[in-house]
Amino acid sequence: MNRIILGMSGGVDSAVAASELIRQGYEVEAVFMKNWEDDSRFCTSEKDYKDALQVCDTLDIALHSVNFSKEYWERVFKHFLNEYKNGRTPNPDILCNTEIKFKEFLNYAFDLGAKKIATGHYARLRNYNCDFQLLKGLDESKDQSYFLYGLDQKQISNTIFPIGNLLKTDLRKKAKDLGFTNFNKKDSVGICFIGERNIKEFLKQYIPENPGHIITSKGEKIGQHEGLMYYTLGQRKGLGIGGGHSKSNGAWYVIDKDLINNELVVAQGHSNAALYHKFLKASGLHWISGKPPNKEFIMAKIRYRSKDAPCQIKNFDESTISVEFQESCYGIAPGQSIVFYDDEVCLGGAIIESYSN
View 1 (tube, rainbow, N blue to C red):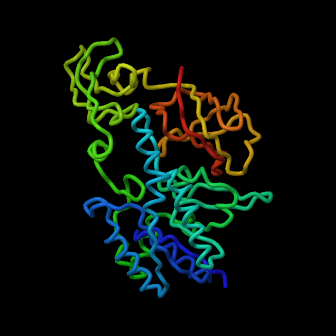
View 2: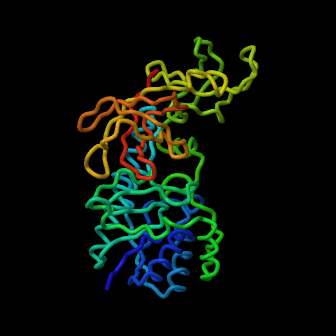
View 3: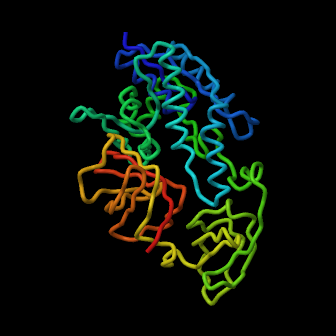
């Protein structure tokens, strides 16, 4: 039999993914991963497990449970904290995919006798010229290929994404028709496996406050920040400063972090030129196919929700690149990932290190 082990989160996406695999004739078992030890106010693993169990009981499939908390702490969360300590804005979901879901879980599933694994990600796969390509999910508003750019040929060739061709609205209807109690469950947001939190209050548990001045681009002191790690470039909300510091009443945005002087630099207006940059450098370059694209211009996202922007890779070596965009991009933030696309094909990506005009 074609035995597939599915990562079952307790959410509606993985629930319908299981039903789709069964419909396609696979022998399916599920694994519930607990990867964070914490109180249940934010990390809803107990409720999620009950939802996963209800789905598996309805579908009459086995549900295994495994705890990767130690691996998550060592390989994902420590990196997450170190990035924030250094004034950067990390994306732990990407590292969680490469280190936990498609490494630890993949190996665990093979130990259970799986032929392949499956997840509820909104993405698709295609075998093209003996390479496996990662494609955007059909539902553009839910596409998760951005978070999967760090996967390699071995990982994606051993993976199935059963819901990549579905729209979220259709998926919820399928879940309701199948009798899943989680059919209208809120989509998970926040930090991978940790949950939705006030990021500043969460970080304060691990990184001591380090207050300093908020200054304008002209050097005028207009407020106090609690620590540079609590802010990201392009941020508007939560700065604690209103209008009245200049002739303009425009909203204030973070445009820079002066790590040496511990100063948060702000400017007014979403269209302020200091928020837009045309060049960036990035490290940790990874191509899903194992080789760079043979095209002069490709598209790129600098954040998950940013629009695809045309760009050109000016030069690169085995791990670093310089990128030039056709038009300046808003809020480029070191620590975030730049992910490259050729139409619907996710090519790979890298970690943003710096930006310039």
